[in-house]
Amino acid sequence: MQKVLGFGGFFFRSDNTSELAAWYRDHLGIDTVPKDYDTPCWQQQAGPTVFAPFDRVTDYFGNQEKQFMLNFRVADLDAMIAQLESAGIEVRRDPNSPYPNGRFAWLNDPEGNPIELWEPA
Image (cartoon, rainbow, N blue to C red; front, side, top):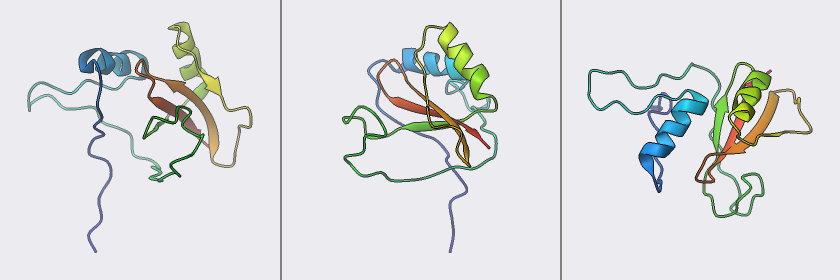
């Protein structure tokens, strides 16, 4: 059986695409999509990726109207949280961390989309 190799992109709707792309670039280091085919796009590091449907009524994403939550692996959760907070972004630490698989924190982008930060163990 053929299997996919990983995510080739994540596409979602936005009220202001250029401002939201800039927010992800400025605060999480995700390069904006190049305007040409010669410029490389953002490259993620190889590592574990969880692909998990959740029950429609889950509280895990926060806002019930949001259909997805982005989970980004980070090397140093404390440094990432400090960077975000210094930019005035509210970050919620998981009060039960650490877990056997690592530590977690949550925030929302400017359009309210939920983001989970994960520092693997």
